[in-house]
Length: 245
Image: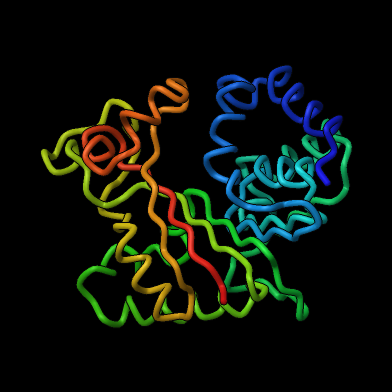
């Protein structure tokens, strides 16, 4: 079961250390991203998980273990390893493990995971292939092979969660910088429907695409902005979930 004290401590630390714009906004986003997943007693694999902020939430919510793959953690100037160790100390749990490796270099030792998460990292798993995924068969074959490995690492009955920006956005189509996400390079992303098709080819089922609203607007924003048109006009962020039979 979730440890209410640990959950409270998690959001308290978020506020104290200013790890998110606010604990309330992060809580709203966590419910959107992970609220449909039963975490108590489960294991989580977070591919490209940075400093592990989502992983520490998962264990606070009852997950037995979370493994965060972050290749930049080894000697990175971004200080991912340092921040991870700080988070582990602040949150007071040792159930999160960070490994400084890519998904391709990960050796699970036969372990399977109930939840596999790629939060704003799916395009970085093989960036060169992702750029041409919509037009080159070889790139689609490369990603399908990666997804087959993800399928094998997901426990039966498990769930895959992918959150990212889609390739199409009003600002990108106009050839101008999006003022809300000025660093996004739209050509390095793909549509959730294409990802769902490739994942289905690898064995995943039951695709569900949700469009992300501005968390700061809370429930009101969710009512009016969680749709494809609003996303296209704003930041084109989505969450795709699929199941492992």
